[in-house]
Image 1 (cartoon, rainbow, N blue to C red):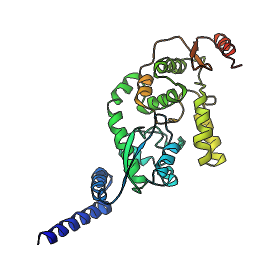
Image 2 (tube, rainbow, N blue to C red):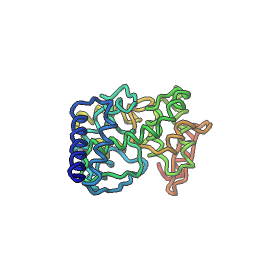
Image 3 (spheres, rainbow, N blue to C red):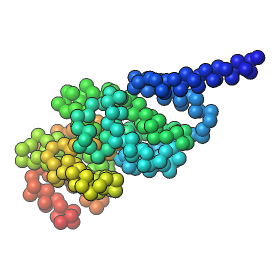
Image 4 (cartoon, rainbow, N blue to C red):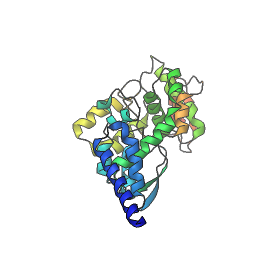
Length: 278
């Protein structure tokens, strides 16, 4: 009798989960994911995957596919669903202008997945973690006059431009100084160009690539690009929120990865010549 009771209880739990999946709206998503996780835990192998700070959506997709979690193609398709951002409380006003809707919101961390669990569940894990990590940043962002999306975008550029946490505050100051300047309306960061070439161009049409280049290349667009170029870590986000107080508008790193800063274009050219960059 006890065995049969156990079977009945398990069947009821499964039927309840199916009911939630079919009839609950987006407000039940967390409950649905938790139930599915529990029901799946005894049936699937797990895999632990680490996503370095500065990983792009395309790089995350490749890691997930290699780990057997989902296909890269499915993940990239779902990473374009801007409705997922709203579902987790993130406000983005320009989804049509972004490379991937979720770029910048898939927090780089170490995650445990079920092998074969699929892109939907995997993205849910990323977004729940981002929701926790970014919750305390919203008030800080508002006090700067920038939105959370602005700060994440700036942080993503800092993440890719800087090799050392110790230099992030100074590089952040260069970006903020340019944003506040009429003389230097463009950020002119190479990282945005590399991002377009390596992590966007292989996945979009030539026409779409040209459109995105106008919106993301900081040699073409003025101010902050339309969206993040990576998924930055907390150090880069902190630097974007708290730039050092400097007069600089230019920076370079030399062959020994030493950073040099300049206030004027003439000083910048001299530093480039000394570093052998021109």
